[in-house]
Amino acid sequence: MRTSWARAWIAAVGLLIAAAAVMRSRTSTLLKVEEPVMTWLLDGTDTSIWDGASVFSSTWLLILGTLILAGVGFALDVRVGIAVLVTAVFARVLTAMVGGMVGRAAPGEGFEGSSFPSGEIVNTGVFWGMVVMMLWWVGAPKLIWQIVLEVSIVITLVVSIRLIVSGEVWPSDALGSTIVIALSLITAAIVLEANPPKLPARNESETVVTA
Image 1 (spheres, one colour):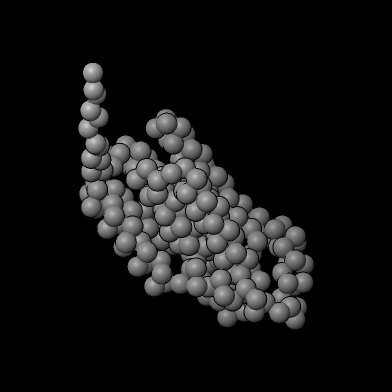
Image 2 (cartoon, rainbow, N blue to C red; image 1 turned 90 degrees about the horizontal axis):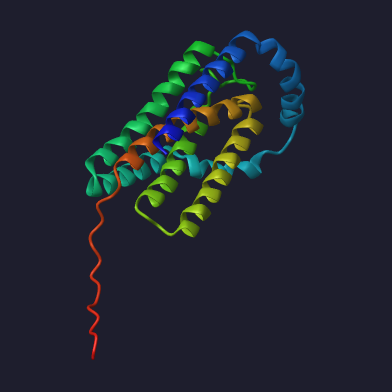
């Protein structure tokens, strides 16, 4: 699996570089496709239904949740606790670096900074993805972490839609943000797989065999 993770990491890096290059050099071409879509979305459309999705990407939730995940990691393996914190920081730094190089303006007015990749989408996807990974790492039943995986995907998708309809990001920015999410989570997965949790041994009742 380590070889597979390494290949996935390299592929994600390649995709991110390619996406950033396209965003920087082919902005006008992308706008011909995306501007009509955004004009339709932002032209008097009531987007208030999506406002509630902001609770899933709120700063306090992401910070507190990340600290809790890191605490669980530290309790079982210091390296995993560090990996959780480093993954969160890595995602933010990578987002800022790529955003600074691309410098793409948001579709709506009043939004500063680059919209590619979206920091809010990245931070949301990385946090909820780490929740899934920690459940997998501690050995939670497959059904549980798979359900949480589906929920985390829906949450990230809903947050992305909210930002698109509010004019903060372009649709292609949301897609690009998923590459940063994948790259960050693959990095964490490599560490988690290399350091299986040292869970307390279960007390099993002795079996008495009678003749």
